[in-house]
Image (tube, rainbow, N blue to C red; front, side):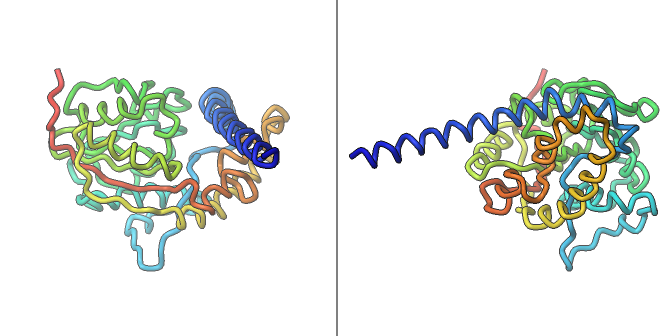
Length: 284
């Protein structure tokens, strides 16, 4: 009986420690890491902050031919954008369409899309702005987009929504600012048990699923490239950044960290999806 009680106690302690661990990194990413990196983005040459994606052998993204020599170090990050956009039925011909990137970070994705694609207009929003890219990027909240109804044909959201306080509201806002038959291209990670809830949230927002793909394996391969580069950045970072080194490495899922192991064990998975807006919900 005592053995059973000890096992139950240890199990409960482990469960509580896991919850505290997740809460710490949720708050760390939102309140410490991104504001801190925003102040240092020019010093650290940060363009992208996603985990990256390694193409499958049978995948072809024609726009990657436009990569320059300075893009090579960020190829895995850029390829994740291409993967998300490729799920849109319009890909790669976006002539005349207007795109919004929600949570565009340092603007690397905006710069790439402007250079590689034929959108008529490209805008971004983020709660913290390092560069407005000639007025294309606005300060804003993903749960309250600063745009009128029916403003965009395509929304792209890369590896950000897991940090939102109210994901349901974010998807509703996408439905509101997307035009009829517009598309949401989305890539993000979730605990396996959370994925069903996320899909229900999108459905309730009036968006119709076109396709979804589990890209965990390709993201893990991408991490081999991105984590090595981020590690090198850390070595050259100011002392203040070094104080948070272990937490930062966990955030970008560096090999050997608990977050990397969760992806390896598929406790967490990385999903890419595209939805179309049929305007079944009417907004004022």
